[in-house]
Length: 60
Image (tube, rainbow, N blue to C red; front, top):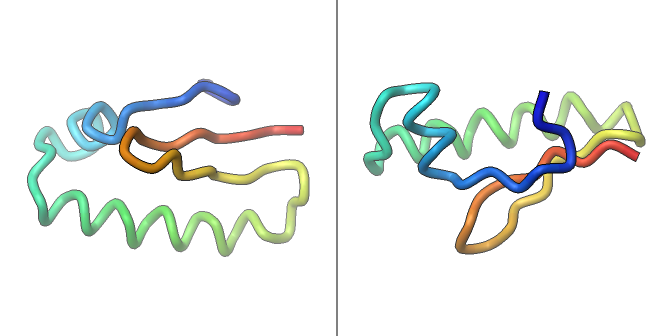
């Protein structure tokens, strides 16, 4: 739904878990890592980490 848009990390945390605390942030890191592994097979999709801001789902 939000392809190629930069999304703030805290916004993602709030929408998924209702809180942006440390433990939820670490859980999100694990999920992002797992998603990246699954997306490796599709060269048209990738999740970029924009340091200090959030994530971006890039579709070519």
